[in-house]
Amino acid sequence: MLLTDVGSIISFDQLVEVLGANKLWLCFLSLNVTIHLLVLSVLTLWALTSRSSSTTSSATLGRSASTQKQVIGNSKKMTQDPVRLDPPKDTPFTANELSQFDGSDVSKPIYVAIKGCFSFFVWIVFDVSGKREVYGPGGSYHVFAGKDGSKGLGKSSLKAEDAVADYSSLTEEELKVLDDWVVFFKKRYNIIGKVTPTSTVSLI
Image (cartoon, rainbow, N blue to C red; front, top):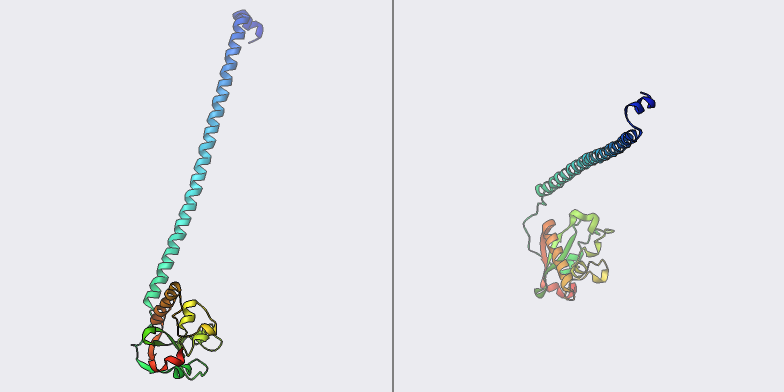
């Protein structure tokens, strides 16, 4: 329809009013479509993000469960394979006799004495031959072999001057460390005797 034909039907003012109304309606429609597209985009992004987070969480939970099962499995394995210890022996040793078991003679076992009851000058002797690479010559704890090095164990010291039996100068915290060593030795190594009171002077 031509503009002249429209003019013959409606007046010019009416035509302007119609076009203006249509323009406002088109603007409103365009804005409405834009809002809907924006909302749709936000919902799509949220859905993708949620799915990604869910996948990541599932994978993390799966790894955690797997790790937990592995740790539990290792713990069970350790529990199933305890160190088999012989009944404690009460063989008496002098300090001189004990010194002969420092690992220098490969035909002899390696013995280590550790805190027993210092007030009664009694030290427990452990057979650590199973860890010759640790307590034998060149080993990291060889300084304690063939003697009582309770003070050094309590101080966490590998100095020869600290590897002595007299631990009376240890602090409360160091005494706790020494007690932990005693518990460790009793769980890992056979008790084969004790250092007798007659060797007190030479031990200290």
